[in-house]
Length: 160
Length: 170
Ligand code: SF4
Image (cartoon, rainbow over all chains, first blue to last red; front, side, top):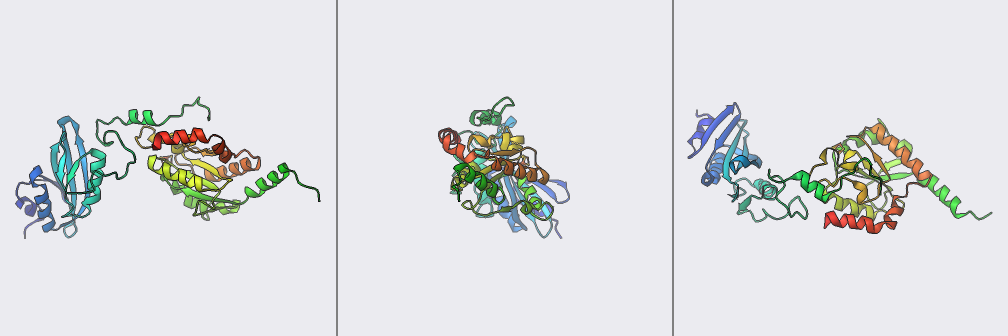
């Protein structure tokens, strides 16, 4: 019988790294993400656990990763794709994994990633009245924003 | 019977008020974890005449457990304004006091008393049930002596509070 790793390797254009048992990384090109996710679902990865972004600012790239889970084999596989940081656009995965909908709204808000095909990505989600850089980007200066907007109490301050 | 003076009425009212406080707790942060032991048999806050309550209209105490961000602050202000006088606010944990470990966060608004008047703060991250019980007792003393006047200050300094609120809420 074919192991789950071999099955993933059969999917076109994937580079598979087996970190340890139950922990597999699958690197793909941007054009192949949706196809790969679809194939992964067909071979038993029925659950999308996490969809998020790592800001690879040194390379000027965003790493988008999809953590998938296979309940029968009890295996986690992470599909990773690097995209251009200046023009971050991905295609929606919500047709394959409906739970991607909320994750995509989150990365759109927190990282400024454009999600094509997800109508609600880009609308306000968690933040209210946000008008600065998306706050999870590494070039966003949280201390500066915080000290500009909210007042810190120093020990000598009197109450009013 | 002689007529009671305004002061005497107030004294008696305060004395009665402090013995029956209903609390609405707005669990914004992790500190809410310490409330179940405070309420239930281990520390049993009802022996002090306090009871948790679910609606803002009937509550006397607003307990803010932990950090507030722009989103939750808006709700807190609504809850606070819905409450009827006299009403008391307790800021719970270092986050409500000054941002705590989230002092550099883009979301946490740091000082609660710039937006609504806090009568009392409980320091600590997170404060233990003993500290909460002590705070309730302190609040009772403040009510008894008429010093818990946050709701009066809110009316008096409404312009100050509204300006600060507008600054962060837009
Ligand atoms: S003071 Fe500590 S326990 Fe309380 S909300 Fe802040 S971080 Fe959490």
